Image 1: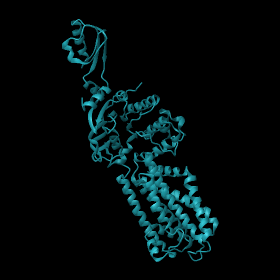
Image 2 (image 1 turned 45 degrees about the vertical axis):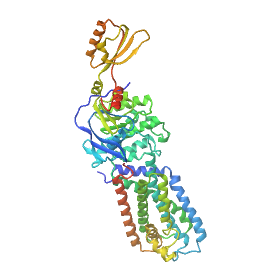
Image 3 (image 1 turned 60 degrees about the vertical axis):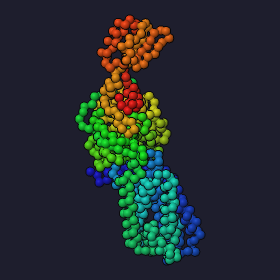
Image 4 (image 1 turned 30 degrees about the vertical axis):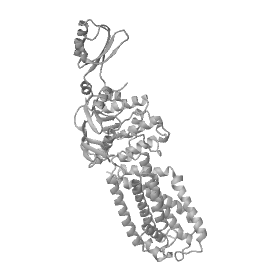
Length: 255
Length: 316
């Protein structure tokens, strides 16, 4: 018997195929957006601002932009798939078969990770031409990219289950995901902030994802990558347990 | 032409519904429904809009969780043992839903995969053939007509050859050709031993297909019997006589359910008869009274009569 069930494989394939069929919208567009950020912020701030020692602002910005794209697209994948399926009614095709809660969660989250990494890789390939990047600890890069994408994929599952309308999902995205991402240190080091906002940033789990990810490139970070790893792992475990609990209860899915 | 099902061989219970209750705020959708549907049956679930049919089917499918009571499929509880229960069930939902990202073949392959079937193309091809979908296999779902989408919904419910098939108004708003195709295929599956549960507003379909029916009204089962027993319970048939001379004797007037006086050409009466053997004494009495029968017709009660009577009075 296969360790990975056919049901899980199929749902993962379907969720991956779903975004790949509209790759212009789901992959190319976010890559272009990230490139515009780099062009504008890199052009305006490179040479004027230095966040890390011996690291240009453009080089500092690229890991942040890559990670931001990974996170936002991982969230978009699971949340948009679930809300569209709920509103059009075709979620019934997932709810009727004998798929376990773990199979459903894992497939949605893993497909989100795939999309996040595909977009992240796209952003990286496009932006790497703008500057020279080092890779001090590639395993940290991979680990934080995977964990970050999994966390946002899980948040997407929670938001997709919770939301009953597109505007509720948009509110989740605009009032929670976007501020948390932008205030996590994508464009700056938290050491450049006043003490109060530095302290507030430590309560933002997104900060640890981006800080740990950036450590993999430069070997420098605002907090220890081990601390970031511990916080990010606990955050993932909490979100995964919330998502599995919602599915088990059938919250907003089985009435 | 409709296809009559085979006589089921009774063995085990396919669907067991025990005192299921479900309310939405102040609305009681199901008020303690209990039913046992045997393996191999072709079972009809009838009732007016809002009677609770779709709520009951959704409860069977695990899409709705009952407030009280339980449902099991082939002995597997749909809540506590949901994986085993769902594996035995194929449901055609009432709503015309589809995933716009995929073609017909992709949709059916994905649905097979959800049920753990990896290489299912042989059966998928057969199902598409039976439902006249073969030439649409590589067409995106968005490009299909409503009738074609309905066929795909049926195919999706059958990809894993479920022993229990539930069809929630599968022929609502579809053309005659699809009905014929669908009933031919479903009858074949029923002959092969699949249990079929059907809800429909087309009572002639239910009468032709179902061996046993339950009628729901306001979330309660108000009738549950075999089709033949239900039809017998409606006080038999109507004997329609058109008299060209004379009139109905007084001692037969208590049998009149409907009379229609002609324009000087005689009288026309509908008389209730319980058995065929009641007909001859009525005719003899008419001859004895001197009445001349110009035209006569024996009309069987049908499911529609029963349905209307039950929905009007709450029972037969």
